[in-house]
Image (cartoon, rainbow, N blue to C red; front, side, top):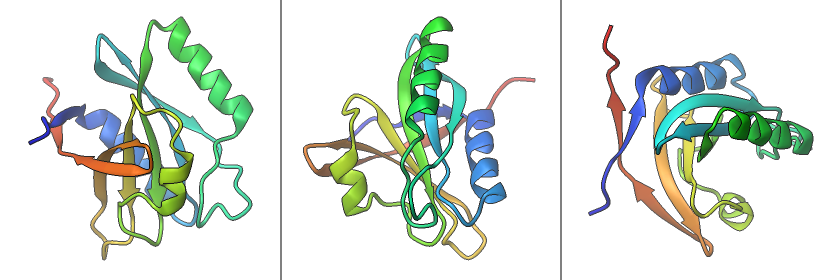
Amino acid sequence: MTQAVLLPRPLVNQLLTEAQRNAEIEVCGLIGARDGRPERFYPVANVAERPGELFRMDPAGQIDAMRRMREAGETLFAVYHSHPHAPARPSARDLEEAAYPEALYLIASLDTKGVLELRGYRLADGEAAEVPLELEEMAD
């Protein structure tokens, strides 16, 4: 069985809050990590023609996020997006367009009768392998 990925609760809360705040579009962005530990959330504008159904990161925003990550001594940990009206599973298009096989792909779904769902996947060669996620509680 695949080992669970530990996600800090504040990072997950940021992602889910952004998805809820923009409930009619697919929000998207990157998560940077230091020493393999996810630390920072980098929202990127969705510039898809139909942002309620697809996501396409703004190229300049994505480059800027990667630059900021590098300057902070971080590496790409995850690519995230939301599905306002679909389950938290990769679509055929998500599989086709997955460009970072080393990254975790996080999908948040709002299509769950008021309960937010977040799932993680490794996407490579047109295949999706689900990765268990665990929330890390932060000490006060």
